[in-house]
Length: 403
Image (cartoon, rainbow, N blue to C red; front, side):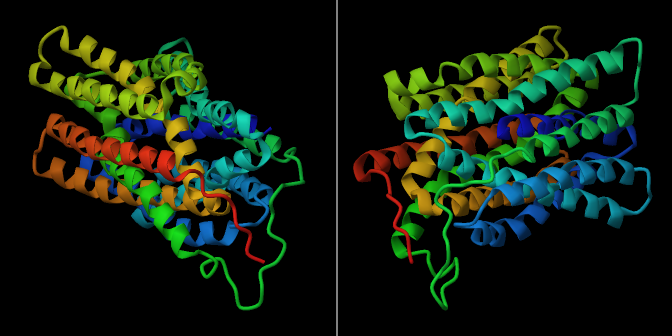
């Protein structure tokens, strides 16, 4: 039920990821304005993530996810409709609330899976959960292509509204989640709160677990939210075709994901994470440097090929990096770490969006922004290598329940 709920919620999220920037460009928004609106979304998540993670630590996760599953499509619809207004305040409020509502659902998801799945099924369960985004991207991308270029010829606004209405089905599936949850903390001792129960060893392990995420998130924030703008403005690729190729890239993601348990078993975390990510960085450099010869007829095919190959290489490492982080910090800290990592992604994307807007305002080409992303990715890969070695040396941090 959780996977099905996430799949339908991702329909609205993916539609906005693939097409919202195109819609904003059609409305006449400049690069800096688009980046500013996106930064508002991430700022809202920054404000909520850490206190939310402390609050749900040791609590039942099902009710919180259900609230998030209901609010996410509501604010997704309001976000789209707010663009018809001239009020920047209303638009920013909708972007912020959309990000915060998705956080309510998304953050508890991984700890919930690790609580309910058997240890031997963790890798497969995490991989399946990660694939909802890919399956949603595949479905939305293909449907959006036909809705935009077929006989219907729907405008971008109606396409976005349609997929966000479909997202309400996610809430329906979340209502059917089992009520019983394992390892729910009954009651804390007097005077003890979530923050006071975090020990020095917790903090040390949490810090090591989140540092690589910070590097990857900072780099990604400079490029990933705006990659469709790169294809639109450098290579002249339309929104329907970007949606289609985005969908096809996630076919490769889903195919490669089936090999993740085997990669972990036969090659281990080092090759499965740092190896895949390193090749992904090289492919990203190939993608970005197509701007140097964008006028050549082969530039767009090379860029699209690199885009489609990079996706599975970076995405398939995701389940393994999550597993390493969650094992290293221990069961007692998983909700907190999931929330902190969400805050890191949103915080990094908040600042990266502002930096992207400034760089574009100064006339910095997309290629140099993408190369900066690749350089920061390298630091993140080094961080993951060190984290894996620490996990191998120190082992998992077993849960120590504080009564």
